[in-house]
Length: 288
Length: 224
Image (cartoon, each protein chain N blue to C red):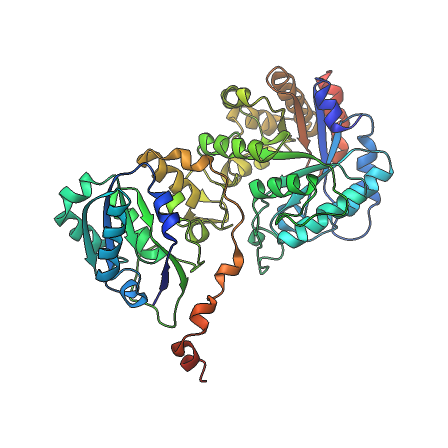
């Protein structure tokens, strides 16, 4: 069952993600992807995450597809102009890639090539609009295509945005442009997420709440200080600080969050950020 | 100098839709030299708008609209006419529009597209910047330019990177431009502008227009 069908079936959907390596050795990444077989409904493949140059998302999505897994191609506006983005979308389509997550993308200076010229010719909203035009059989300026692609288009939203109302306005625009599902920035503050999800409930678009596995108290504090829209409440930081087995505590926390979020949204998106191998244990611990 | 061109009248009238009382600002600096915001253009605009059914509550021509302190003091002198206006129409470059919007507290519409630096920079030390994009969007953003105030030059609202302190995650010293736009539009009661989807910009307008490249002055500057 594809991601679109999973969401349509009304089941509680699980997605996770893998980050392509810096280089051509894909052994570990493919092994991580294998661990997710039969456990998740879709696997995001990040597009030069954190603006670090590495193996591209499209090739990896193709490899996953060949193995019978369900990839979600992340496409950012940071590195390609409107010509490059449209061409890559057509390329993804002929490689059998159906799910696309449209993002603006991190700024180039945050990564390992801060000297790069950032593109941002399109933004997340206009990119979604362009995908819809390609599906309708023309490029973005109206020239007919010889064969049109078909995608299942998702987008992202930050429930901890400052202010969240501005994020919600943008979310509405993404829906208007054609987004069919959302994955969110990491959620640790259930109360804040509940308020957000009530505000977006009228949109009737599936939302998968983001979960980032906490690796340490230090990581939680770092995110609170440096990652916009992420807030890890102090009790969770304390649990990580006092944990004898940090992996075990991290998995417990993730599983608890997932169980609490289950009744609020349509699914979960787990971002393991290096702890890909722990995802099956998180899924086991949630006992969904 | 910032060279500007008047926007098509149709676009100006569309931006003024629903607003009947307008105050016009002209600029005796670059806009006068561009033939877009000097006295003749301001008077012509007044007449054109009146023909279109608008009431002009007043007008002023300031040298230079990019000087915020000057604009503020001059508008104070015209307080009655400014207060009576639903919105302001600034016949000037992108910097001037932003300066007026910043100090007036009123909805400020751009009457011009800024197309080029034209060879000389004016004396100006404010925080507003203009990218001379040739297709001014300040009308939709409360008079704050998203091309210069947002690290990613986004047109459809903030990315997820606004920090708790309201700064840009790219640079902790820099305010999030889209948060400023959101706050400005909230204050002006115009948040509905953020529901509108901006189409991608026509980047070819960034190039100096052909009309400019055909002028004698352009040729002189090229040493032809």
